[in-house]
Length: 203
Image (tube, rainbow, N blue to C red; front, side, top):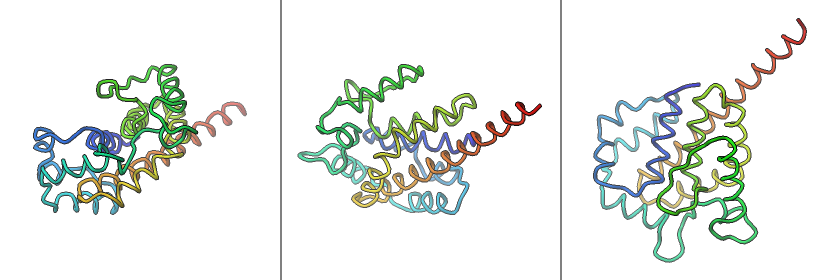
């Protein structure tokens, strides 16, 4: 696995999950964006756009609030149960399914306070973590197929479309891009493992 992709997705996931703070954004300075590892022209363009933007703290805080917090109806509801369950409520059936998978596989989720664990950014973080573990490739594939694909791409597209700031617009694009890269890597690894198993059976 490409460790840079996993680390980059973890960072993006944290920025999409955590309310902006002066301390957090101070770490995301010009030097950090210039040193951000890139592997394709797509992520280079995204990083360049963020680096060239003013990254105004007040504007970024305002954008996070209007996207994910409110007041009133949120532009983006970040929990799977709102998108997937017959009754769009917090802590629904899809939340239970996600938490069951995490418990069975010893996946620790560190969410804020009593917030549901099925937040899209937390799922992105788990995908990144699993992708960087050679023994967890099949599990990573399952998370992408069963928990990411049914709803998170549409959430990331909505963030890209509705964000006022370049910051969140490009982070959403990066998140989708990194999961696409990870998915391809996981599938390639699975295919190689299957070939190895078949070869061993022939011996």
